[in-house]
Structure formats: C-alpha cells, structure tokens
Length: 273
Image 1 (tube, one colour):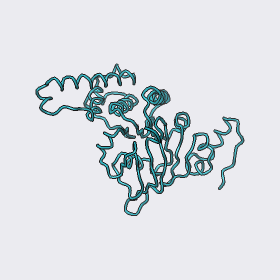
Image 2 (cartoon, rainbow, N blue to C red; image 1 turned 135 degrees about the horizontal axis):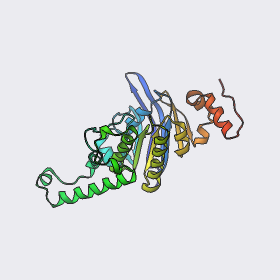
Image 3 (spheres, rainbow, N blue to C red; image 1 turned 60 degrees about the horizontal axis):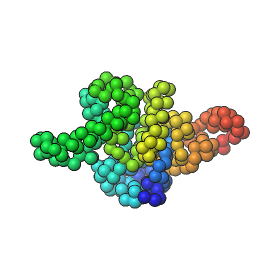
Image 4 (cartoon, one colour; image 1 turned 90 degrees about the vertical axis):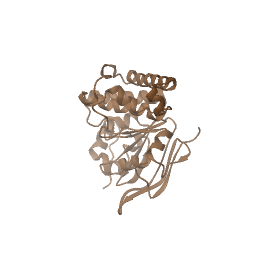
C-alpha cells in the first residue's frame, strides 16, 4: 500500500452543543509514530474514540487503509487492523497473563463452537498457532516470569505491559496508545519507551501515542499534533512543536519552553501574551 495509513479530515464532534473536536485533520504514515498532546479536556480521548468506532463524528472523514471508518462498528475496525490500549488498565484480573493475551487472538479464531467442543483437528491446530503467537509476545515484552500468574497480583508497570501485549496479539497495522506510561516510575517508563521503539523497528507497526510525559513524546515521536479545547493548534516535528508559541501558552508552559531552549543552548524566546 502506498500513501498514508490513516487520514483524518475535518473531524467535528459535539455532545449536546458542547464541541469536543473541531476541524481536526492529520495523516499517519505506514511506519510513523505520531503523537497527540494537549491539556486535560483537549479532546485526545474523544479523538481516539472516533478512530476506534466508539463515537461517531457529526462531520468529517476517517480513512484507514483507504477504507472509510465513520459509522463502522468497533469490532469491524479491529478486524481491519486497528488495536488500542487504555489509560485505565482494562484487563481481566482473575485470569492469567497468558489468558489475557489469548483474548487478543479472538479476531483470528477460524473454528466454530462445534469444533471447539469436539476438539477436532482444525481447532487443535489453530489453538496451537494462537498459543505460539502469544508466547512470542511474552518473550518480546519480557514477561516470562509472570505468564501463568493472575494479572490482579502483578505490579502496575507489568499490567501495562500485559495490556500492550494483548493489543499486539491482535496483529494490528495501527496501534493506539492511550497514555502508556501514565503512573509509572522512571524505570518502568524507560522500559515501556524501549518496547514502543521495538514495536516500531521489529514489528513495523504504526502508532498514535497520547501521552502527558513530554520527555517520552519528544524522544519517540516523528510528528506531534497539539490540541486545545478540541482545536488543532500545531502539527509538526517535536523540535518545532516544543518551541511553538501557541503550544507553550496552551499546554507546555513558558517555563518548559525556556528550560528546553536552555538545555539545547538556544536563545530563550518570550512567549506572546
């Protein structure tokens, strides 16, 4: 496939007169790591909900792999190759790590209830294939020691890794990461950032990252979209976004802009008031 993997054009979303998104447009390339930033209430999660089919925008177009997604049900969007993680961990805590990861394989199950009950050849072969795929993810995310443990007893950072693994089990073309390092300590954040880079380099999966940790965003993203009250205020490379006056004023703050400029040995520009 040539051209962008995802195209969002003039997206508008409102709830009972309250506008959550207005005139949002951007593209994500085939192997791009694209980030979305903005203050709380900027519309980042609403945008993710539109992409994954939970919300239907009143205006605009979403094209994924050349297919129009507006009005398409979430399960169909998942089958098309879009997977998502959540800001608040959404795992089955009484199931093991392996069982949670296997849930991500349900889109690829090709046998019916009869075959499963009788445990016929096709069901056995597919089950073995899905388990091999899950074991590969366990190795990739370095969670071998936790594979048979219930998720509910695991450390927070490992739970976030398991949720990422479940999304990878769907074999996505585009991965939506909703605050993947939220609530993590420095070591956990570094580990997650490393896995995100590995996903891109080794699995060649495009990603959209929503994250408040600006260090992670600026270090990982190819391009960044900044939203404020649902309105795009800037889009471009991280170095451009972190110096953009409107982004500094709306989200990063003047002190952040001065600190980044000073660290880079650049002149400190005053933000227009």
